[in-house]
View 1 (cartoon, rainbow, N blue to C red):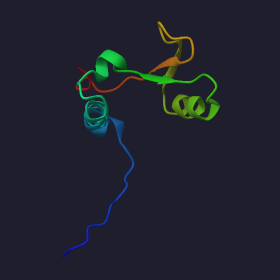
View 2 (view 1 turned 30 degrees about the horizontal axis):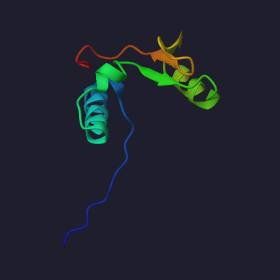
View 3 (view 1 turned 90 degrees about the vertical axis):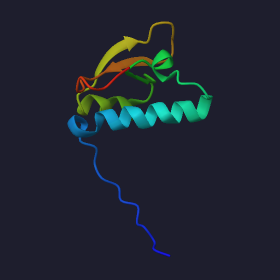
View 4 (view 1 turned 120 degrees about the vertical axis):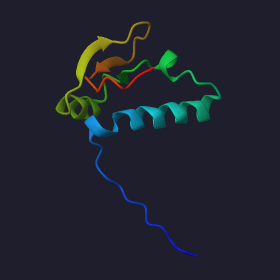
Length: 88
């Protein structure tokens, strides 16, 4: 039996954005049994305003804080430009 080694590589957003969204969408389907990822999350990111380390990380990587997520009082909506192939 051949043993395969797991390799972690950095994500290059311009090359891997579509795969990242597809993997997240699949994890949503596995978790909730429906393909409602974009209904729930939209093509953007939510983060707690009290999570200073996460906010600093996202800002460092080009994400913009849009303020409170509509309809929520405990998470901020973050936005980052990604290649056009990503989304619905």
